[in-house]
Amino acid sequence: SEVPPLTELTPREIEVLTLIARGRSNKEIAQHLQISIKTVKTHVSNILSKLHMMDRTQAAVYAVRQGLVPPEQASRPRA
Image (cartoon, rainbow, N blue to C red; front, side):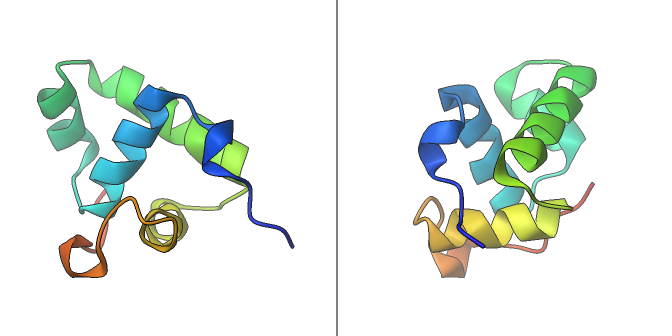
């Protein structure tokens, strides 16, 4: 199946996706972006939906493959 382009995501969703790929938890993402955990969860849901992915790990792999995060900076995502 074809991989959806990054252009499907908003700039904020790309920011969240990048942090997911760096292994940040929802709480850490919320603190970093100064938004609520609920808002982070909404962004994560939107990202997974738009990219047709099941979980954060798939999204993290996508981020690395798209060049958002260098492989050496990628980390196993935490919820």
